[in-house]
Length: 160
Image (cartoon, rainbow, N blue to C red; front, side):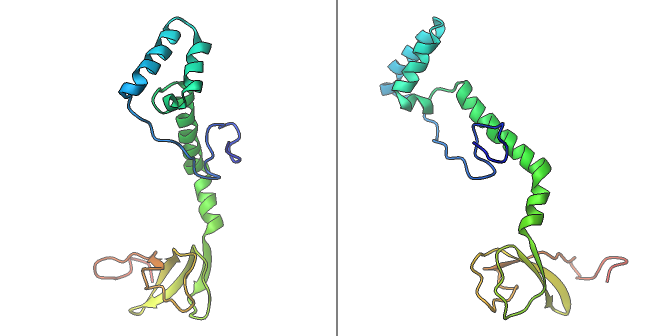
């Protein structure tokens, strides 16, 4: 269950990744079990139908029921909540503005530094949790640019 969204009992997001099995198509070996499940279900014998699934766990990867859909729904709802309300806060909490780049500093993942490139001050985001000391922000194995320039590289109107 999500610790962040306690009402969403079928997902772990955003606290951790959900571990779901991939679904399978029916096979010759599972058709008789599926038919047995459907017969119980059609007769209104829901406990017996659920028992077929419980005694044959492979059916949980074949038969789509309310439990399957609720798991998917909770995961989607957690994603929506996270991106609509929590994502900006999440970014603010992980991104660390470090100022001007210094070659003697060990920068943690998500550090943002400024660095002079062709006489222009540009911003870079550290993408590695293991960026070696002295690695310049122009090294794209560890950093990504956060500053965009137009074709000519000129600042926009009113910007310096």
